[in-house]
Image (cartoon, rainbow, N blue to C red; front, side, top):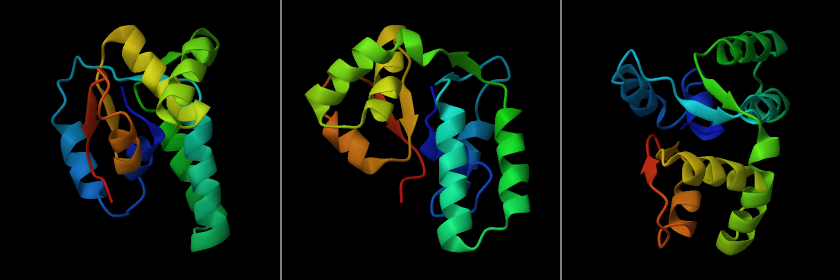
Length: 136
């Protein structure tokens, strides 16, 4: 299960991008990562920030989100995750968005793959499996 911090590093060069690309390249061909459906909007928001703050062109952002949307990912509706996402967000002091990823990991038993060290630290004492790849 991938979160947006990992998804964006597949296509945008930033600290840790090479590590993420190497990790994804090592996945078996029959592995289809899970994502909550908000993954795509979160990636779009990150790209919006790159356009607004880092000088990425609108064309590059548009091309990048098209590549992200085309990734072979299994989408899980956030509607099915929201109640547990809220509980986990409150429990761990994270956003409800991060809670959706945690809820998906809890629901499926999948590892949550993230580049977000802060998130990993906040859930360190839980039973959730967090894999840190490409952290900045």
